[in-house]
Image (cartoon, rainbow, N blue to C red; front, side, top):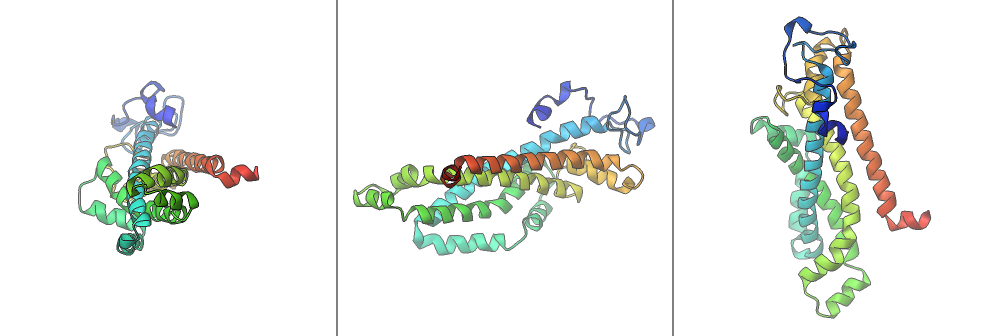
Length: 254
């Protein structure tokens, strides 16, 4: 999928925004492999270029929410004085379904890829911070942390040298699931008209444009849905593989 997104212009595609009224709703053929939509745009080109939007959103949200959740989780888990306050704020945000929170945030601004990334990141960060906090609470009770405290090691050094490296494995695995969730959320937002602008080819926009003709021109929705499902499945399988590779308990069991 990364290869498709990067090299979409040389994979037999045309301008995904080019309108050709005389070619409206053509079925898949040798000329148009995935058919055309209601404006005559080539669906094959739009689906391939749509991979760029989903992957950019997924990777960006995974990176930003991991960084934000890591900072909040480390601070909350190691400094117990602020734990109750910070976690209550995170719990309050988590009490709102992520898709509803993203829709509410998008309603406050205009549709764009950047705003979609920010909205989904805000919705996903509390979940990452909750995970990091749990890991930190477990790690700070380990003997090597007590030994470092006894030796007079400064708190920032303990966090960066002893806590952070041992928490990275869980964060990396969680980031893959956040990435998959972000791609689905982006598609939902675009599908209901609250995500990326309609002129940007994204899988959610393509499915939204084809839903009116679903019963007679099902392929308009089918192809982007297949690509979205394959990408989310691939990211989830990657997360499972990373968990097996990075979790010491899995290594011992093998």
